[in-house]
Length: 326
Image (spheres, rainbow, N blue to C red):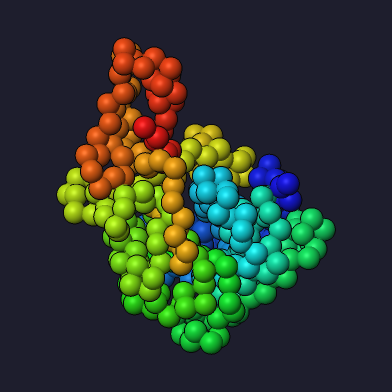
């Protein structure tokens, strides 16, 4: 049963906008932050202002939660078994709010160097989650997660790295130690070639640590059909509605945005999928649909209407990121 409805994001938007000082200078700081995020490894993305941290939750936090929502829905059986989470660089707790829509955690630990983000997290938890998930223990470790030793990190069912590796070039070197106490790992990166490269590097290190891929990878033996591609990379797109306040803050014209992302979900205990992941945008015609799948064999599928009309009607509704079963 859901405990936090994503529709409540509108209420959260209103709460943040009315309770934190919003003026030209704050919106200018937010614009500067967005500019920094265009090249996060080269520019300063640190947030030390509570108002900017709160506005970030409306602008980027809402979009990131939409991506998390999609990943959780596609792997709900896996996430239902999660009782404890360590969120490295968790900002204002976006993953906590995303997962709380589906289940109640025993413990959520946010490892975050920004006191402003931690402060906003505490306020939002008290306002929006304290009554619906009163038994969830929400803690924060203030500091740079790259400086932590494994003994400093609580044992957990799942650790999360959401849009964190893209902000620091040397962060991937520390992942082996950071996941020592975790059963599963979730990584989300921008859906760019650079973001996918971070995913591949992290995947290699996690395989060395004994982890196996759950999603999106469906090829066996650690094979990745897009690893050496010069023209494509593994990424997905989620169309997300923008709120009135979000549009205002980002000076948006459209009522939606298409968030491109790459992700990786791995576990120390192998979990097998029931199909093959669609990794390209399906090409639909009146009589056929074709797409590429994540497979160690021939990865191109062509489903023809004349061969199986019922199956064709089902397959033609598929989008990139769905599972395809033969």
